[in-house]
Length: 294
Ligand code: ADP
Ligand code: MG
Figure 1 (cartoon, rainbow, N blue to C red):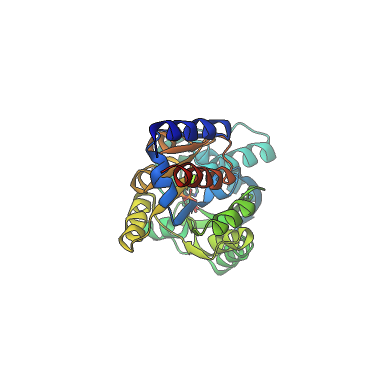
Figure 2: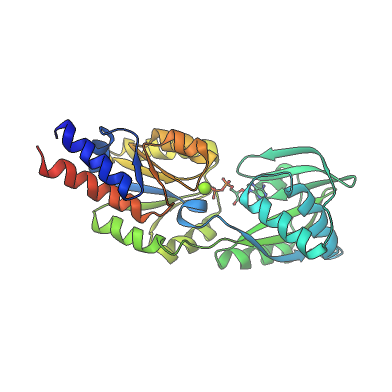
């Protein structure tokens, strides 16, 4: 394609809400055959709400909400913000302060609240601290996950204390976008740090068959390299700090304009409206731009 055609292409992209870093990017866009989609904040809105709090036997609901809410108030994670907000609204109190706050990426958080050593996160985090699940809590977690919800565990002072259920929603545009990817001949794959049950439920809602779940933030880029090693040309769409390395590794990185600066900086294209249909627009645009002008 001539430089002029490429510039016209990128200009047309801007009108469609697709910010392309440079005209040469249209070439890799055109060749993409696989599109890897981050779940939270990309396929889903990422806006979570606390919908249930289930205390373990012997634990008061108000203690569960207060200690977990206070700990999560120190974290930026969408799950954490939902828990902190839900807890402070229900209890109608200012949440206590946290000492020794620690974030274990992709697993959860720990810290000291009101003199208790509190943990909130996934099962593997609790296992690291040798905390055993009780059957009622395990069942409550499994039930919530079966509905596509994220259920995080709460423990303090060495014992399981309850489970908190947060729900995210699929963006109303995601299923249509995925249909368009298929029409363009791309294979969609859902990639997430969340667990397999939740990931499969969300995937089914939007029409994705292939799911790669329980991937730690540091391993997302390796998943992309592996797919490239199979000879695929891979686009990756993501929004989070934890997606940045994978976005950079992909043949085409697509950042949600609604996402973090780290994701936008690591990407080739920004989808200004955070709408995955714009990714299909970008691919169509590149094929048209590079297809018609030799
Ligand atoms: P994603 O890839 O979907 O954006 P993350 O890699 O950020 O998700 O997190 C993976 C999982 O780790 C979450 O689904 C949750 O179970 C757990 N987790 C991470 N951070 C927190 C937190 N602050 N509080 C509770 N759970 C957390
Ligand atoms: Mg995300």
